[in-house]
Length: 459
Image (tube, rainbow, N blue to C red):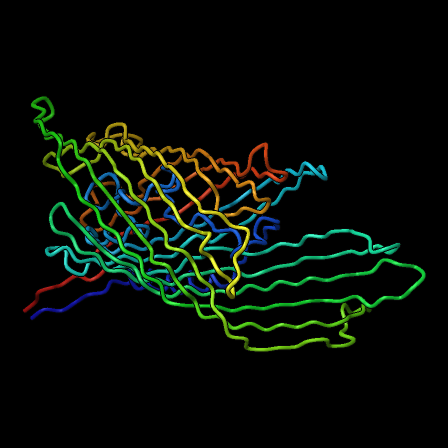
């Protein structure tokens, strides 16, 4: 007879999934940036932390079959699910520090934010036939700003306050299939979110009393999405190293991904009223307009990416080890096609070039912890999707990181845990923009891999 055993350790990990899900809903980013007034706000770097440390490479990156790298859930390209060897639980968080610089009026503003990055689970459905499954949850963007402006109407001064909150989140599930050197996969799921914007006008006048006014619009939206990816790997050269009795391979891996244009259904509540202030806060005086459940749509553009990675592996009696890899990638999206209830926004088509490297000093060595650590670095440059002043926002940065094995490679047949770190420095905007931004992001993630379901034989 056969039975299936789910270990206590695995049950604990499954519990962590639910805890992490609650964690995502409970923690909110606290940034205050005028940039996220536009579109659906600030789109976070929601890639896996390994990708962030390599300049953002996702399309042609893959792991899981190399003893010194471990295994992660590369949800940026679902084709990699077919290479899953063990069940993996992935979680990541980011500390984000930003500084805004304004020319006119001259000013400098700082903010620091704690951002949940993702929770993902990858499961090999059939390792022999190359089937893999992954699912998870991640925030895509966040809206949170408070901006004030002072102007005059005749002899009267007017203070205008602009406030916004909300963002876009994603629940996804994906399937991947591998045939030797070729693999394909897809992700689908549900994108959902809200956007609440308020505009309050206060008249600052000592001689005549004017009531303040407030305009509020709350929009909720959601809809299914579909993305797909593919990877193909070719061996360029192989040779046998007779000194250490290893076989070395130089391989080239191509990768592409794409997300279809998405139209999300939306409902909107609008409210216009005058208000006053008391010690208890705002009080509504008179309602000018109130409409609920106005139907509409939010259109997100298609996105695509293509890349190539050159990497070197070595095989000996203990398994397959990746020595180094270097990759190049291009991503783009037509954000001029974005529509919010039929209206465009101050957005532009975005693009980005990415270059990343990864290497381990000597993963074949049986001793020396730091020999098996994977060091990573990358650079990226491009154009942001936001275009608040009509001059475009250039974006560029550098990244560094490492994958630190918590369990040694000798435990790979049962468990493999890696702590991944990424440090990014970047800038958005240039001398042609009135407002520019510099940022630093430190990301930390854990990839815990194990054989969750074990078949046992007994009499």
